[in-house]
Length: 246
Image 1 (cartoon, rainbow, N blue to C red):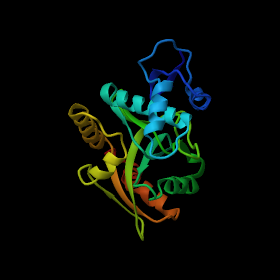
Image 2 (image 1 turned 90 degrees about the horizontal axis):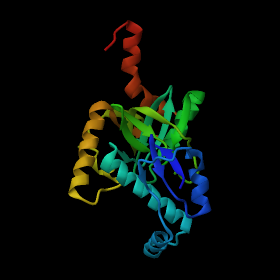
Image 3 (image 1 turned 90 degrees about the vertical axis):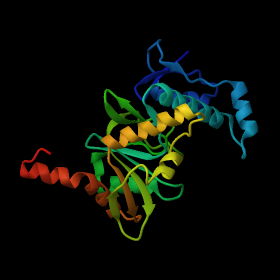
Image 4 (image 1 turned 180 degrees about the vertical axis):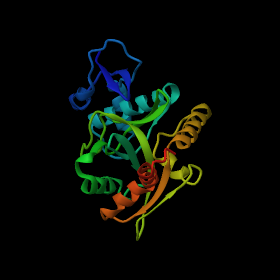
């Protein structure tokens, strides 16, 4: 059975549909050892389709089941979680943008590409994972990258996480997970037990002790990207210029 490397983990998946097999192909490894199995099967796919509120193709059902299996295992055993967001790397550091549906996180990520050009690499425009690896929180791509399939197979240390909101001007302020808990919960897979909910809350608490959480009121204009970037880089750049280390 094939083994795929996703978020720094070797995951055994036996694709049922050819579409899922093609989606997973860039993550295929030569390994025969796996950390866990996230496969779906035809019965699970049929059951998912039967319960779906809208028509659902088999490969979309398989994608949803496999990603859910991975997300649950990562939260339970591997110090991470699924985080619905658009994510990119600039100068090797990861930035994540989460928002309520329709707010424009993909548009905002596009603005970073407009402003910063080749310095930007899209990691995953829709469904990355967050994992603490060797003491560092990383944003990790997955094979599921949204309708436009924007991203690549990579991971990067997280520089900042942004909660996007529409605004008439671009304003970025440091915030706390307590103030943003609704949107943070909507961005992840909600646990089905008290034990896993505690794990998720502890994960968020630790993550945002290490990584800035920024509330960003933004317009659709490219200038929003510069404001967002400055919110976490202006101080460090001015300190470096003056010779201060911290």
